[in-house]
Length: 419
Image (cartoon, rainbow, N blue to C red; front, side, top):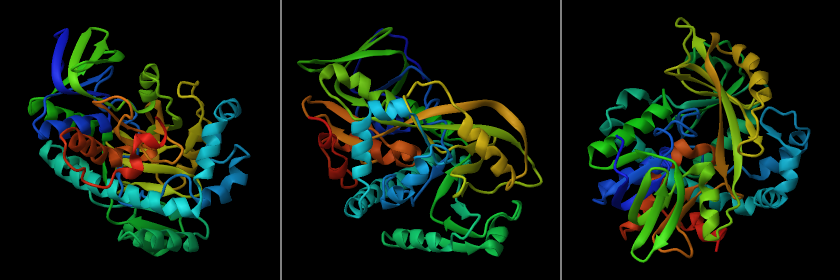
């Protein structure tokens, strides 16, 4: 799946081999365009590797909603498992923080939810098609995912159910007995649950991305591993300078996730990108007490999900610089809480850290760069990148081909933040 030649030509060069970039390349190739994907790492081995593997129908609410403002006092203590933040980062990025909080109003929440609903609907359909076509159908589980409350979460669960129902998304409110029937192997720690019944999950998101990349290569596309130095506009398109050569193309798609903004800076674009850092650790599962689906512990703000590598426990969000030293405090705090629900053994492998790219309105950029013909932006999918990657890629590929995107993309226009 690698390319040794020092120079190439293609209709489309996609920069980034995460779920968004691979999806963009695959969708463009399916439209008959010649495609090269470039990344310094193997497909699906960075941000797209470290998520909970959920293909979520219900992740339509942006991060910044009125509920965030209600929770702000407890988040400001910087001890809550849902959010840790670095003071010096917050001061240096005060403009981003202000814009992020300013978007958390009722009037702005529903339009963004509607936009995400269109993106997610397209993505779920593509995931379900592609995963079978790519020979990875054994990795998908149509068992939904469960959000669960230890305390009195009934009113909150019903409110979330009603919000989802407005968009035709089905869910089920469960009591303690129903949760035990659904997950008979867990310790009965939860009093209320909300089952997202139209949601799927996979046992290795990184392996799924690799399978999509292999399907692209089998269909005539190329995945090239190299360090990306810069992109330069030419009279006939674009030239991508790599550590080991260059590629000429009519179109360039920037899908580098948290590394996208710095590549665009020399072209005069100042992208207000922040980073939701997150952590996970795998643990040896107990074969006699298997976890059957992802569970989101509402009070602990962590997820437990059965993976190929073991039980994956994820942390909440850490807002800090993309490459700041790791701080495992959030993860270490929630592992004992996870053990109070799921029986698992010793840690397996090393702890993981990643950075999810987030814009102030919690919506990705999907579309053309304002001032450069043939330059396309596809990043900023925050913590739902694995869910929304296929739709993001399909929309960009459609626009490159001069066709209508499969959902309304106006809310995702790069021009809302850059000019």
